[in-house]
Image (cartoon, rainbow, N blue to C red; front, side, top):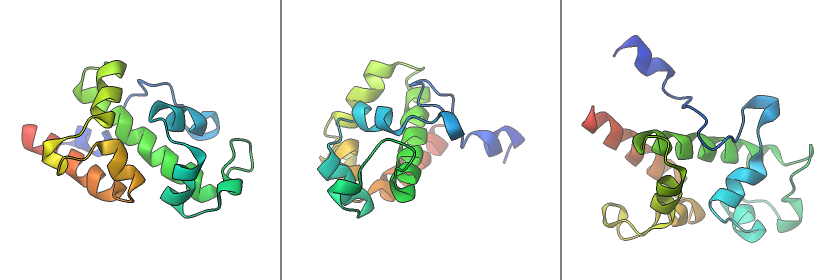
Amino acid sequence: MRSNDLFKSVPDDYFKFGHGADFKPKEVANTLDFKREELSKIVNISVKSVRWDENIPYKLKERLEEIASTINTVANIFNGDINKTTTWFKTNNPMLGGVSPRDMIRFGKYEKLRKFIISSIEENN
């Protein structure tokens, strides 16, 4: 493993989602057109708990941070092309069983998607 590889887990922020205190979870949800009902199912919380202020449930914020990182990782593959990246997440993909990456997240398969992306990147390097 090259030392640079260790730091690739935090990709460039092409989508300007922010990090830490500057993180904008609603922007992640909007990028993939997630509705409140979908988000509540993704992290197993009530729809009424989905909120965007300082009282955002920890589980929701944490998952959206993970998704933001994955979105930016894919954006890096597309040389920072935001439109191409967004389209990739919303398009049915034969390598994913004919399901879109967005739907994999909705169906609770985020970790499987993330591993697939990482594996594909490693194979191409």
